[in-house]
Image (cartoon, rainbow, N blue to C red; front, side, top):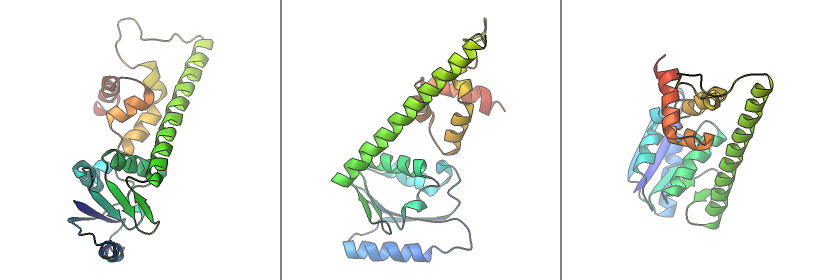
Length: 200
């Protein structure tokens, strides 16, 4: 299956230029586009609210995703990297026409996969380091760590990362992804969301 994704941010913009570029590219590559996904929506919206999420759910090995430019996929580098990483995990090929990117089973993709993995590892280490430093500072200030007696709520670790969790959720991250980054069980993240977001 070959999917073409076209996105503009406002009604004042037109999808025709992107559609033309993709059609010309597909013709030159002798690729038949199976389905077009076109929408007018800001990239600041959660991924789940955008059609790109539908494509990501459908992607299988050897499928192709074509975009006119990489910025059509996400609002920032981390979001775009997350989307590309998922495509690579599914063994799907991605073409970004303006940048000339072709991500698939080639050396460039393997280099990017390494970069994605390294970025995630660095982020996990930074989160762990910040958590340890914050806990040490609280302890030095006489703050008693751990759950209060009789209480099962609100882990100190998640309390320290409320801003991070909310930001990740706004970017469309799943509970399991946040749990992996924070090195906690996904049920811990779910419980935190139930107590701090869903209950609001």
